[in-house]
Image (cartoon, rainbow over all chains, first blue to last red):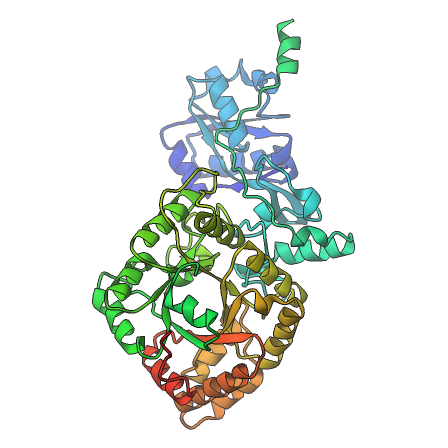
Length: 218
Length: 305
């Protein structure tokens, strides 16, 4: 899932400065699971904004997904009443809403951080960079592109110590984890191979599935 | 000869070689590099010019190499993949070849987080092992990474780093084997303080026959003070400084003399280790001690071949 966290209140206040009528929109999928922009966070932020800005109107609405047009359409008959939409979606959701309502300023209340998992309550870690060429089959299910601070394909580097990455004692060395995983799985031979140089994707990404396009056209 | 460099000639002729580090300044003064060149040129066979060492911006490594070369000192061009993608790496390799640089050391580089621009975007387009392979293909096949032809020769003696003290220990030698298979002609190791562990690693190296496929130069870091010993033990990842060394520095009446003594003892031990073909002295901000260490280690005058 996509993981985000809330922007500092001061930055949100700066963004909102020109506006007095705000529609605050939460997202029911990733942002709810990572406790950054679900119904609860929408309620909390709305309360804070109202107490900080006595003359402001903040109405709340949470839709199941801000990245799907069919759900964004639920906002259609409301947005006309507001000067701006403050979105508690990831960057993907903010852009989808902005694209749907081109006449309205759509402002991000969150900083989108990464694709990741909840490690334990209150701790999330990044696990996938969507690099477009998955090699998890040869790395014991641990992604070095994402979880090695240098994205090495032939790790670990000389900075690994005591199972930790040189960048921070809080970070496990991904290549040490890969080593142990491959050992456990009897796949250490993968470590002796020389993986080819990576083809990095060209951004922005775009996938075209002709089979699905034909169905649509028919 | 792959490159015709002095370092290659010496190592190939079986001479115990000595290299040291000449870090460029955080500024534009050519004199800083030239001064280090003067200090080190008689006691070393080649000088490594570091590449934005510890991710702190400095004069470029290639410029430092040219300054040394102009004064008749042979440089080793250090290059990290942290700051350059495959285009920039290859173009700098071509430029270095054109400028007469003949030794290159291919590195990952310390993470940018440790430097003076900690939020810089790290490049890491290819990794150090892929970089070694790329330079080898440029040299031996006259091919760019994409397979296109290179016009002209790319004569480099290719080096790599090895850290016997990082984890997991049992994997370090596998990684060295990969570097050698990729094309590393010589290896400069992380600073050796933990001699028993280093000797154990070298045995694993010899068991795989790697010492016959590459020239291993053992890294040495002369210690000036107990503070420096403690700092390296506590703060430099992948460096192993045993308690005994820290204690010796703490108890020493003249710490600098003790540091020299430790270094000389290490050299004596390293000379006896099969498969060690030289030493690489990293005397950061203590370059003037190197000539004394080399002299007292009985390694002067440097041979000419």
